[in-house]
Length: 271
Image (cartoon, rainbow, N blue to C red; front, side, top):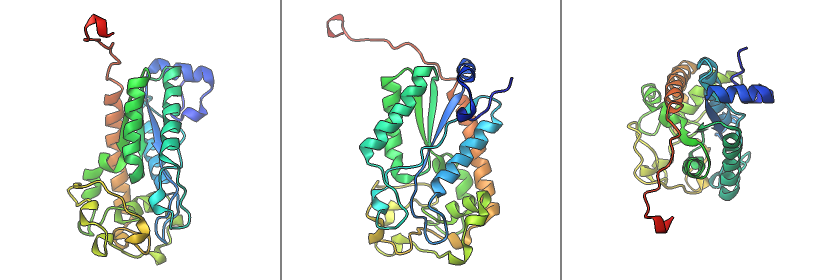
């Protein structure tokens, strides 16, 4: 019997069978937040769910995907309607509990696949906690970093083309849910040109010198950071396909890492 690649569709006996196979379990992590006047507030969830769904579907059982965690840390965007923000402490505790539950059941390889910038440092901490506190290996992925070479190759808008509701995100959303993109409302805006710190926004080489987040409304009128006017579904499909392929490679490699026994090198009296 072939098991579903979706955790939520399994019965508990089927969960046990999945544990015996030892897949990498993907936990999509997104946000509900404004994405300019042309995109729905579910952009982050839609993209990360699509990536995880397709990677798991195509992996021949080596990868399984969890239901998405739809809300993230979003305080900086709260001046824009449609944004939901979860406190850092709540977000961390919640996801640690999700991962700990999977480890308790016997899953040993977990990857949090994040789609929202301000979740990034938090999912990193969550993965580290899970690895040192529970019987599992947990990693964190910002999906745009995983697929950055595929994304960068498509961008035409200059060094600030990829940030938020931008050429990149709009292209990927056009490839997934084109009927929800209000193309007549697309406008370009570059916060780095009007008070946003220029080193906050990555260039096309992916670099970011300083990690910093201001209130979004201090440096932005539309909610857009980038050049969505240059977006297309064709670009988005190529970006998504490259990222999915990379995610399958990473998921398969990650599940091969052994959960080795720890070795205590302290002197006897310190143990």
